[in-house]
Length: 212
Image (tube, rainbow, N blue to C red; front, side, top):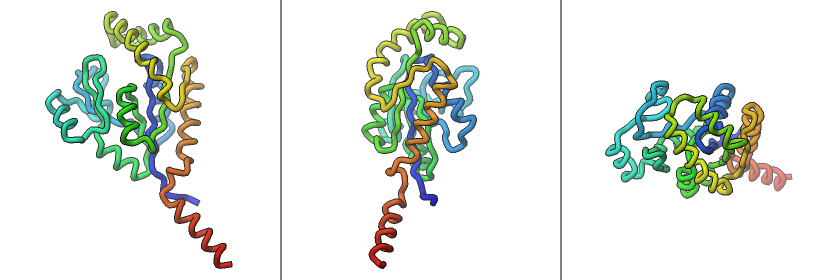
């Protein structure tokens, strides 16, 4: 029997370069029910990024207005730029039974915990080694040597928060890590709290017994 299901907020977090973006892309390729939460950000758009698909790019005054008006579920400063999650889009999607993937850091995750914990499943992704993390950052060819060093230093701080996540994965093999994330998501979708009509269904079963 099919019940109306509330969507899942799946949070993937990791140090930059540990693999969360690759895992996210793999999920999107074969699962039409999950989509990326498109954040607003004040950082400059990279050459391979599309407005509205990767981020909504806004200036600092507009970001501050949205935050002050309570229009953001979470907001954070990362590498000197601001990021935030628009509230209205999230609520609409969850209510329609659609899942949302969040690619955010621990600051954003903790803020979401305060407002949306019952809807959330969180995963922290670790690299197999720091040497491998550096290689992945260098292969991306998106950042200067100085920026890579900054990201590595920030990785140590981000790792301090791994205990605050529901699950922790070491991303040594992308295919295996993606499979594990799929399993976690499948379990979350079946959680009792996701099904809005379950109480009425159980009550009806009990009434059928009473009528015997």
